[in-house]
Length: 233
Image (cartoon, rainbow, N blue to C red; front, side, top):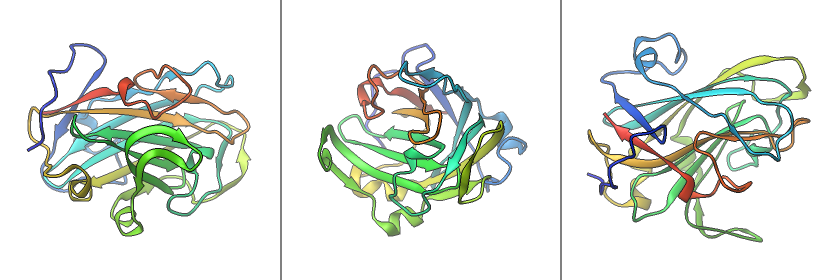
């Protein structure tokens, strides 16, 4: 069982993560019964440094005994995807991100996915920026990255950039047991509250943009003080 955070505020800062039993379809997140019943949230707080491109991005989460599931859908434009390897700078492409802090006394994880399904992920305990990344952090190992399920709707490479409007989706599955080496004893329980944020970006696209579910007070997604809340139902 996780340590409990204080009760989540009764506002848009809290998202309810619904529990499911049995298999979840990673390929049809918006039509299967489990995904349809999941509430959605909007990733629509754009930083002023963004270009005039404002892609509509929504996300959903579900959980079961073994894992946390997530799904994004993006009504996008200027879609670009050139990074194909684990731990490559996917945030430069058309990208969605999920940052999560399961325990209030530990660090947080960043899971970043480009539209082709490449993943960047690490565990961060001190996000103070340095020349090599962060003051205290550990990239997830390749074997851990391989255990994160990713189902993208776009091909692995989109180059040249697609200037016309298009919609893409991405589903992910994060097993709880790849988090435990970093957080200690951990499993989701009904009533648990975790901290988290969701992002959309495209740093090296022709129309760069930076959007969040809960607003960030600087052009920096690594701000756990700005995270919202996840309540497990």
